[in-house]
Image 1 (cartoon, rainbow, N blue to C red):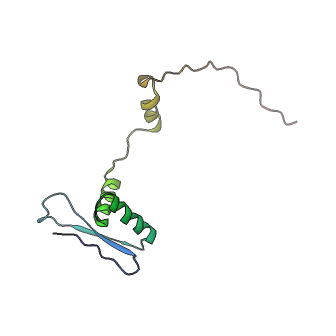
Image 2: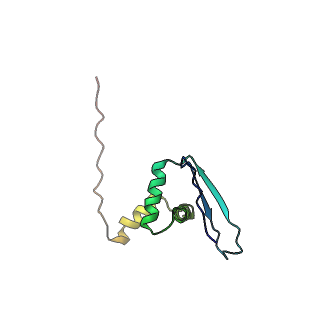
Image 3: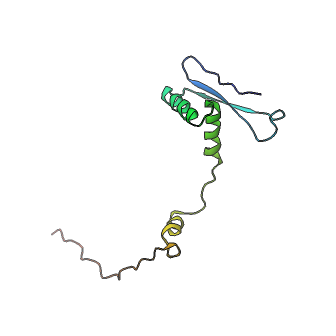
Length: 108
């Protein structure tokens, strides 16, 4: 069973078949149509597919799998920063002592 790319003359749509995991012969497949795709985007997809030795359709499936397969991180920015720069990772900076603040400027 193969996949096909339907190309309109104005290159405004690519039809990609997205396979669900499982047996190819017994699997229902969803299709998606992307309309009004810029020619530049289509060209870059074609080049990227060629670099990965895949069809444009397989490259589009790969990009979609990667994009929607990621789960958002449950860690916040402070936790991520500590994981790279905290005392457990070889960075232990001494904080200088705090002094009194400056006097605010006078505009009189």
